[in-house]
Structure formats: C-alpha cells, structure tokens
Length: 249
Image 1 (cartoon, rainbow, N blue to C red):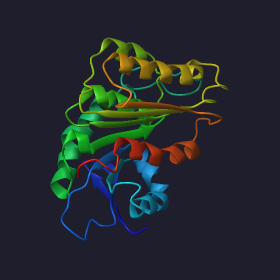
Image 2 (cartoon, rainbow, N blue to C red; image 1 turned 135 degrees about the horizontal axis):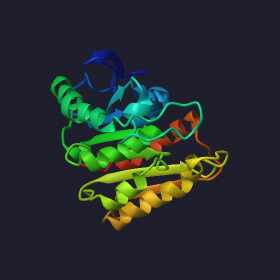
Image 3 (cartoon, rainbow, N blue to C red; image 1 turned 60 degrees about the horizontal axis):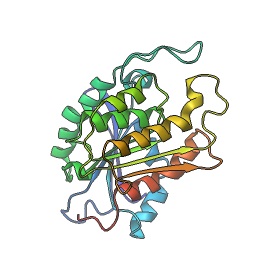
C-alpha cells in the first residue's frame, strides 16, 4: 500500500480513512466515497485499487469506511420483522444513521481533508444491506450524495420497492450503479428468494422516475452468488463507472 490508512473514532463511531498515493505530493482535492461495514469493500482490495490508480484506470479517491454498531438496525430504513427464524428484527434506524453521515461525518471529513465537496464528487457505496441503505440515501440526501453504488442491494426488504415506486428521486446530475449475481437468493425460502427480481424491479423504477441508462447502470453477473468475494470483485468496476476518468477534476 502506498496510500495512507487512518483508523480513528468520530462521535463514538469507528471510522477508517484512506488517503490516496498522491495526497501528500500536492494540494489538489479528491472525490470521496463513503462506505458501510467498516469499508471492507476498499480495504480488502486496496492493492488492486492502487494498481488501477497508478495505471490511470481509476481516479484517486479518499475512502471513508464506517463501522456499524448494529448493521441490521442502522442499515434498515424502517422496522421490519426478521425473515429468518432465530434472528433479531430489523430496527429501522437507517434515517438516523444517514443523518449522521450527511450532517456530522461529511462536514468533519470536508474540514479535515482536501475533499471535492459537491454531490457529483461524493459517493455512498455498499453491498447487500449496505447497498440497500445506499439507495435509501439517494432518496433522502440528493444534495449530498450524487454517486450511488448498490452492489447486490437487499431490495427484498419489506416495503422498499413500494417506497421507491411512491417516492420522488432526483436524477439530474447523478449516477447510480447497481448489480446482482444470477444465483442470489436461489437457496432461500423467504423474501430473500426474490433478490434478483427485486433488483431488476428497482432498476426499472429508477428508469421510470427519469434516470437515463447512461446515468443508471444495472448488471446481472451470471453464476455469481451473494458473498464477500463477489462484492469485492465488482467494487472497482462500480467506481470506474461512477467516476469516469474523463470527468473534470
């Protein structure tokens, strides 16, 4: 690793901040990607990401990973009963969690580091439930997060498709990346069985709400299931699509 990894605590939340290789070489500013689940999506493939940065295949980013206290509560938009016996219900604290990111953490990061502050240079990204709460952020904070990555988003969550269908969403100047593996949910016998179909439906709703296909990408990966290794493999592709190299710095 040639960038800088900083482990810190902000307002009792553990955060992991990554500064790109050239951060200390000059005074330019960088786009920021906020990631859930401690930022494992960038931390577990940093070598690959940095190789792509050096090869000019990927822009340099500041990454901010936020470790959850209880992901089933923080990444769920509203209360819902558990879908699997023996598991806790979903606490529905997503709005509070996103308010913390938008109103507390982002201003702190913008003040402390050389960030590009505008929505078109601010992304929120995650996989599974992290993908779900990232899409929720697209609706709640359009003036903050202009780039959204939902990798294998859990759109089977009770009421979320209805929420998307009935809610307005800002599409001008924004880009959303979505994907799913073709095998996801196949072995489930609950709502999660609809994983692929619900992702497709969520994408179609965004198109109906005004997103052009040039602004909203949806990919189905044949033979891939719901898992850490698949999410990591697809994360660099999501970044490349959300932040094309030709974009103005």
